[in-house]
Structures are given as structure tokens and as C-alpha cells.
Image 1: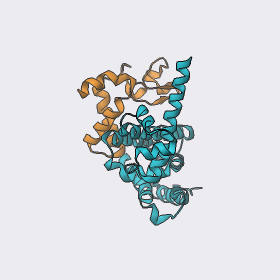
Image 2: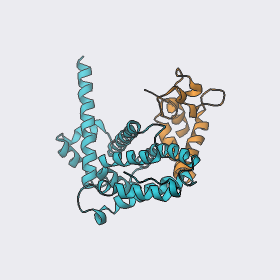
Image 3: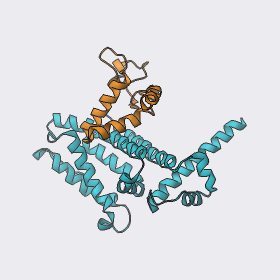
Image 4: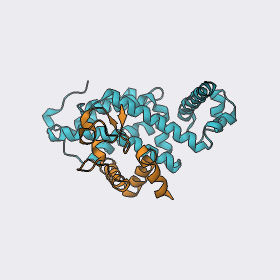
Length: 85
Length: 203
């Protein structure tokens, strides 16, 4: 099973993929309305907001966890090392 | 060929060390367990641990990640996008029971752990909260459960589980606390969030 390169979500069904396109390496939650993949900054904001919404954490703690998760994902390895320097 | 065999052996030793560390951390605590204790329990030389995990923190993060991967896998096996909230919660408990001693230490000692380990813990809770949120949002729309903000729905559930786990000595002198109380806790929580007559007994 493919995993989204930008958030790590397992993509089981076609509808899990960006625009329902199983050739894509990223999921429906990581694409923009036009089907292109979100940028590092966009993803960091949406992931942080997601953690705040589902766990109620303070934004700072949520953002730190989101960065730490993104560093491990194939899509963000380079961006993460740049943003950490 | 030789290299592949060596790599395979290396991977096996690494997995073995993680396995032993999960057990050891559960038994003697995450911050209090020494690497020498893990080496002894794993039957390897002390230096072997540092070949695989140069810093003690690396081993700890690897252990938390392994726990997170397995609990995520368990949830994926047991639930899908059509699962009810009750099914998701049952799967969550089933996953936690497999790692109960380690998870208990993790939540008790979390604030004392390095930042990397604390962040990994949040990501694990995030995976669980995704499944809970998907099921809950659907059931709120259907009028089965109350309109409770996602974070409070999640934190109320986690708070209940964690209270029993962190005070385990007061609830259960031996064996699994979650096994002993899962039915009662599930039933109570579901009743709490469900709108009146739609409440169904938890089997």
C-alpha cells in the first residue's frame, strides 16, 4: 500500500489519492484545489491546525510536533533540514 | 551476498534490542532503565547497543516509533472509514493492551523525556485522533452523538484511560488494568457522548 509522501497517511482506496489519481504520491489532504501538492509551509500550517483541532494543544506545541513529523517524510526531508538551520 | 546477510543480521539485532527495550522500559521505567540493563536482558555486549543507537535518546525514539507504528497498524487492521466510534475505541484499547506496561510508563514520564520523544508521542496520539475524529464527525452528523468539539471528545476519552493507567496501583493490583476495566470505561464514555435513546449497550 502506498503512503502519502507529504503526511504519511496510508492510501488504500482511489479516493484517498489527490484528485483520485492513484499515480500520485500524495493524498487528498495534501493537495491544493488544482491537484498540485501543498508547499512545506502550507502543510506545516495545516498539520499544526489539525493537531490543535483534534487534540486541543497550544499552537507552539502542535507546530513543534508537526515539524518533527514532517522531517521524517520523503517530501520534506530537504525543506526540513533547511528550515531547521 | 555476504553484505546482505550482514545487513539482515544487523536489522535483526536492532529489532531485538527495540523489543527488549519496550519490555524493560515497561518493567523498570523509561528514565530509570540503564543501557547496561537492556544489554544484559538482550544478551548482547553493552557496546552493541551504541553501534545501533549512538545516543541513548536514539534508542528511546526508536522504541516510541516502533510502538506508534504497531498501534497505527493495529488500528488500520481493525477499523476502516466505515467503522463506528465504538469500534475505533475498542481497537484503540486492544492496541494499548498489547503495550500496556510501556505505554503506562510513557504517559507517566513523558514530561521528563527529550523533545524528540515528546513530539513522537504527540504524533502517535494524532494518528489515533484521526480515526476517532473521522468516526465521531460522521456520528455527530447522523445525530447519534452530541456536538462536542473534536479535541474535547478526544481528550475526555484519553483522560479517562490515562487516569486509570497512571493510577493503576489503585485499581488493579496485578494484571492488565485495561482488560479489567475496558468494558466499563467504554460503556460509560459512549453513554456520556450519545444522545438519549440512540444509546446502545456496549457488548
